[in-house]
Length: 145
Image (cartoon, rainbow, N blue to C red):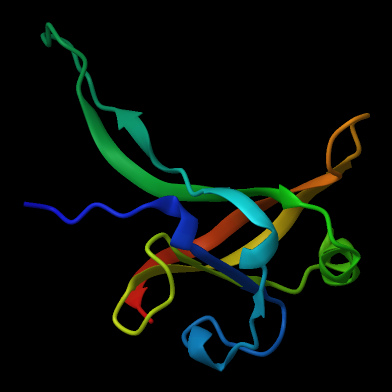
């Protein structure tokens, strides 16, 4: 029987500091969890059609993988001071996402990223919100804290 987990204990952190493409553990992470309301990490794979004469059904082969990360939450100027300057930067950062939290041995997803979007919203009668979009570059590493 699987062990199901509530999202309230999730963990999300981000880094633009040191850390190589092969060693994400040397990066200095900023814990954004206290202001995050949702993290989405969709991944996909391109397909190439290989249907030929005589086939009655389309055939495909798997190609390159791709992924993005979308984070929504509550605006905080301390977060913006770090995030806004990274928008458009050629310096790659890391994201660390623990859907079940960040306790030792909890599962986490690590990926090199580029910030591709940053949005602040201030609706009348509600909190000021933020949204950050990341493009994953390279593999997503599924590891443990």
